[in-house]
Structure formats: C-alpha cells, structure tokens
Image (cartoon, rainbow, N blue to C red; front, top):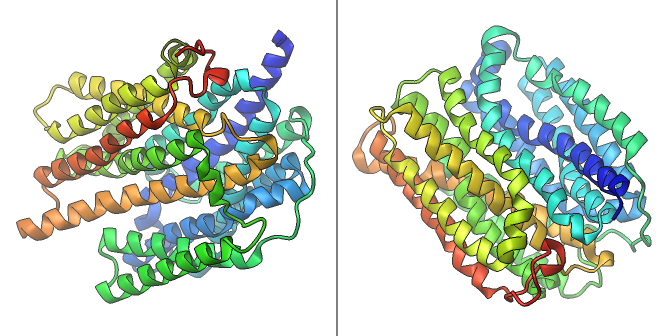
Length: 468
C-alpha cells in the first residue's frame, strides 16, 4: 500500500474519529450542567435526568436502522447528514428555554448520534484495506475513551465560568468543520441497495432496547418505583422475545443475529459487552468518589480522571506492534486480565494515597483499556464479508450502547445497595470500593472468552504470523 493511500486512510479515520468524539463528549458533558439548567428552567433538578434518558433512548431505538440507511442512501451521505442532524439538535438544545423543548432537541440529537457512530465506523471499514484495519480502529476507539473522561470536568468548567448553553454551542464549529472535511476528503462507497426496511423489527427492537435501558437506568439511580421499573423491564423483555420470533421469519432483519455464528464476531460481541460493562462504570464512579469521597473540586477531579485518557493516547502507537507480535487471542486474554485488575485497584484509592500513585494507576489503566477496545473493535470485522458489513456495524453498535448503559446502571445500583445496607444517605468510600470490585469482576469475566478464538484469529489484519 502506497504512502499516499495510507495517508488517505488515516485522514478518513481521523475525520470520523473527530465526529465520534463530538458525540461521546456531548453524551457526558451535560451531566454536570443539569442542576444549573434546572434553575434556568425553573424545574425540579430530579426531573432533569429525562434529558439524559431521552438521548440514550433515541440512540437505542434508531441505531439498528443505521446499516440499512447507509446501504440505501450511501455511507458518506448518511454520515454527513448525521453530523448535520446532530449539530442542528445541539443548536436547538442551546436555545431551549423549557424542559420539554430540551427533551425534544435531545431526541433529535440522539437520532443524529444513532446514525453517526455506526455509519462512521462503516465508512472506515469500507474505505480501508484489511492490513490497515487495526491502525484505523486505534483512532476510532479513542473517542470512546476520551469523551466520558473529558466530558464531566469540561461541563463543570463551562457552567462555572460561562453559560450552560455553551455546552451545546461548542458542537457547532466542530459539526460545520466535520461536514466540510467529509465532503472534501472522504470518498463515497457504493453498495447494492437493500430491500425494504424491516419496520416491524425496528419497532420491536426499539421497544426491547428502550424498555430495558430505561428500566435499568431508573433502577440504578433509584429514580422510580419498583413497580414502574418492573413494568419497563417486562416490556423490554416482551419486545425482545417478539423480535427474536420475528427475526427468524424475515430475510433481512434489522438486527441480524446470524452474524454471531462467525466466531471472531461472536467473541468480540460477548466478551466486549462484559468488558464494556465494567469500563462503562468508571466515568460514573470515579468522579463521584473523588468529589464526594475525597472532597476534591470538579476541576481537581477532572485533572485526575484525565490521566486515564492520557494513557489511552500513549497506547495508540503501540497497538499495531502488540497485536502483530502476540496476536489477538493472547492479547485479548492477558491484556484483558491486566485491564480488569487495574480497574479493581481503583477500589483501594483513599485520600491518603499520594496523587502520583493514583495518576500512575489511572494512566496504566487507560493504556491497557485502549488496547483492549481497539482489539475488540478490529477483530469483530476480521471475518465479515463486505456485503454484511452494514448489518454487522448495526448489531455491534447496538450491543456497545447497551453494555455502556449497563455499566452506569450497575455502578449506580451497587452504590444504592451499599447505602441501603449501611443505612446512610450518601455513599461511603467502602460503598465505592464495593462498586469498583463488582464492575472489575464483570470485566474480568471477559478475558477467558478470548481463549475461544482460533490461535491465528485476525492474523490477516494484525500481521501476526499465521502459525500463531
């Protein structure tokens, strides 16, 4: 592959990564601004969580349709339109003067985000040769690590020193630049047009994902009665059973679970889901522990949590070398063990620890988590035929969204249970420790699943010797 072609591949991956960073940043930056926004709207702060939930539900409902949209209207065109929709939603959020208006604008943002994430990944998959896939995925995994870490402290800084509306307005120049760069530098990929959209499947999957995710979010945060949570989860399970029955009777279901017959894709989905559940709780638990348990300010907390993002960036140049040297199977097993253990070490953090030790643990954790994310994202598509890439990205992105939502819900539920057992109104350091150990144990369960991979799995994309 020529140097010019490699540069084009990296440019495409970088453009898509910037758009995905905007999406992941926005999904977390709003959290610290909700109390201020509640005062501006004259609303109950407890009700402001609906702005977060509306966005997550919109993502969950519309992500399954992303692959069909890309095949029907063109990958580059849909990705560019998704950036426009997301940016327009950001503008409307910044102009909101009531909670209802904000929720409607967040739903619009979610529709854009639902198309932007999986279609952006699909755009890269269709643009890069397999030997460059690991390098491209290294760029694409960065936003998932940086956004949740940078979002909360950035939101605190914006709310403290400017207006909460800037939380959404900062997306506008990024979105405009993204549209320009996609138009100038990203090539269109043409695929055979699909049949009709599986509308019934989209409805059933939407009911399943919305019911389960909304129910888990409310249960984890203690925001609803047990009866309401049970009803939502029951509706989600019913939608899931209905979809499973429906998907076996249509030729092109909106979520194609027959892809799980491909070993590399199946291991990436199941092991990656367990790993992301644990890691998804980190951006929720760590800032709370630092601020409420250690007494740190939002700015101090942000500077500490940023260490994990720095570790992720340090790993990028080493990713391809590591996978080429050791292969996917060994890397996912041993690196997964190390990443889970480092997550568990966070349970031992105490205010008396030297800051240098905390920084070192978080830096190392970000380093190994970055490698694990990149490896999962790459091996998932190692054996996917080109005509099935759009279906694979839809299913994979849906499972990612579910696992990250589960991580926050499980972390929050662990704190609630700890407070209930201890009989105190606020989580103690022991409660945070128990929550960290629980999510670390879930991440640890992912590592042995890597051993189900063939020894030479992904050799074509990693460059590892076939004998491995």
